[in-house]
Image (cartoon, rainbow, N blue to C red; front, side):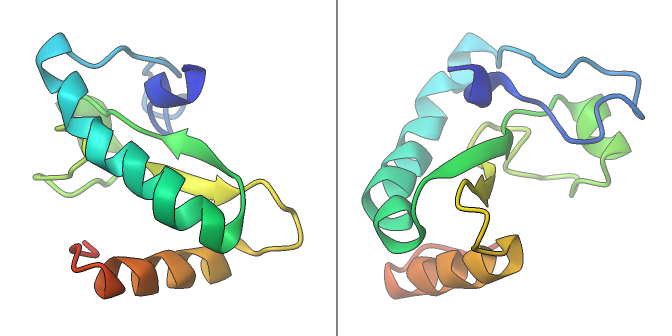
Length: 107
C-alpha cells in the first residue's frame, strides 16, 4: 500500500511530502493499471517497485510532469525493477512493447 501513496522522486526538492493519499474519487482509476502490472509486467520483467503514483497538480508541475499527466488522475505508476540485474531503461522498453501489443497507449 505504501507504494501506491508515493508521490514523486522529486518531492523533497519541490517542498512536498513523500506520500499522499489520492482523493477518494480517483481510487478506482488505478485498478486497470495494477492489473496490467500484475498480469503483464511482472510475468515479463519480474517484480517491480513503484517510485511514483499520484501527484497533486503543484507537485506534478514541479516534477516537470505533463499538465495532463496520468499521475494527476491516478492512472499512472512509475516503476523500477526489483531485480538489480535488469536496468530500468530495459524494463521500460519491455513495458512499452507490452503496452503496444495489448493496445494500450504508451504515453
